[in-house]
Length: 142
Image (cartoon, rainbow, N blue to C red; front, side, top):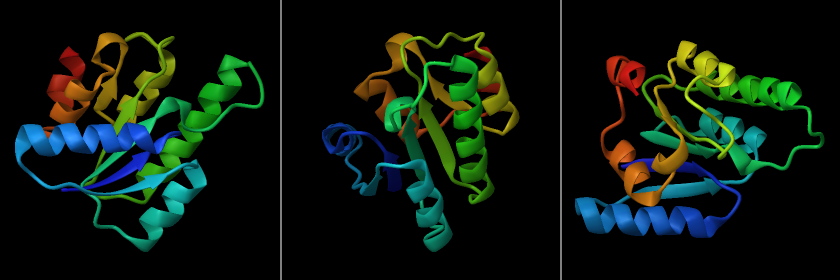
């Protein structure tokens, strides 16, 4: 399993990898990215990732306008999705997000079915979704 982590802190990815490897007895090869543009460049260079795990708080935002932040996130995730074919994107939301969030509906339309909200934003659930990503039907039920 090859995973590209988009995290603000490398301890997060190390913790996830450790738990995953212990739980599933499978080695994860991984790389950390700290900026959205770096993710796109990495995917242009290497198309062999099985999963991309993106935390919403990857980059600090320059303003507090939620609509502008959501548009920025959508544009970045859209450009990332343009670079992949069968790689699953797992998006870990900030706490403020709910299932009815407009941005999440837009992500769904891009084919991003692995969005983690609320209590599911934990290492155990993240590992489970890395192992077996949701399909479209499961995402609708979620």
